[in-house]
Structure formats: structure tokens, C-alpha cells
Length: 120
Image (cartoon, rainbow, N blue to C red; front, side, top):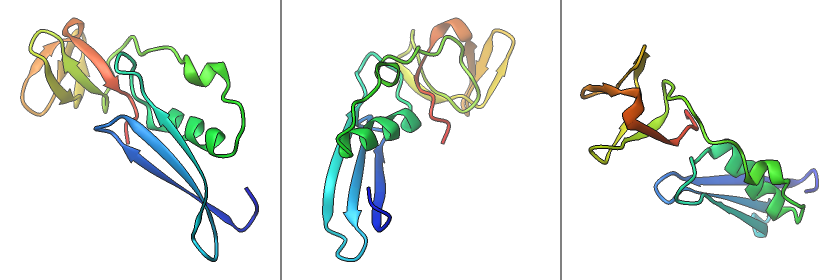
């Protein structure tokens, strides 16, 4: 990337992908593109996706640490989680003890799997 190039990111949480576009500053033509796609079994994180997509757009090697980040073991406020026994996707609004709350109700922490910990 030269000083006059511009990088934009497109984050698609539904498709769990991040695209990095490197454009010429004046003409706005796309100079390079990198894509990061989250595996269906992994937790999506937009910041990690941006780092992977940018390195791919620049033709750089993606470090193994980016591709194999540890999956979250705790549910935190702002996470998007799936309630494992109901299959419902919820945004976590509060965590108190062993309970996780969302806009509709509460459930036990053990019944949640974090699918997006971007918190954006």
C-alpha cells in the first residue's frame, strides 16, 4: 500500500465474511482485494477478519495465530450467541452469575455458544 492508496473494509456479519479493498486514491479503481471467511464452526470476529483480509490483499502471509485464534469460553456482554437448546440467536445484554440475558429473556450460560464476539 502506498501513501495514496485507500483501504476500505466490507464486513458482512450474516455471511461471516470480511473483504479488504485497496483502491487508488484518485481513480478509486480497485488495486487489490483480500477476503476472509469464517468457518461455520468458529466464532466470527470482525477485527481478526479485517487483519486477515488486509494481509491477503497486500499479498502477505497470514500468520497462523490469526487463522487459529482460541474460541471464546465465556459469554460476555455484546456477544452474539446461539441458545443451544432452542437454536435462537440472541445479542447478550447482561451477564449475571450463571445467567445470560438478552432483550427477550434470560437463560443459563451453559446453554449458549458464542458465534460473534466482535462487539461492534
